[in-house]
Length: 113
Image (cartoon, rainbow, N blue to C red; front, top):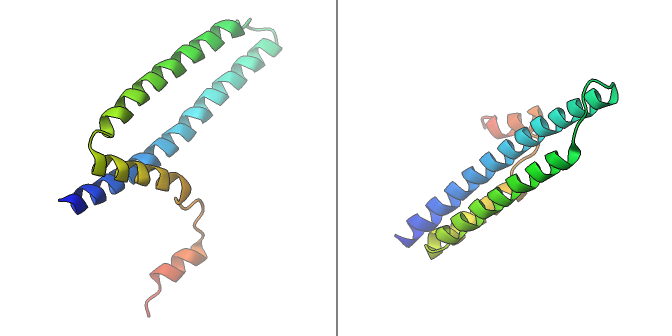
């Protein structure tokens, strides 16, 4: 029972970590592209951007995300074995996820002996 909770927590944490890492990269790319487009429009004089309003909107979104994350983390840690192994898997996905796998490494792992 304990081993099942620990293993399932680690695997689930690893999968969620990979999902968050990928989703964050995509979201940051979209936001950066949108802000670059706004800067371009302001530079050529088509639009006037009120950067203080954009900053206050971004801060309110960040505060909401932090509030949601703190509540879910505390509820997850009420189950000690699952919670700890989930966090270990989550952090392992950020530090040990392979960045680039080239064809040479794929051939090494799939070679029949």
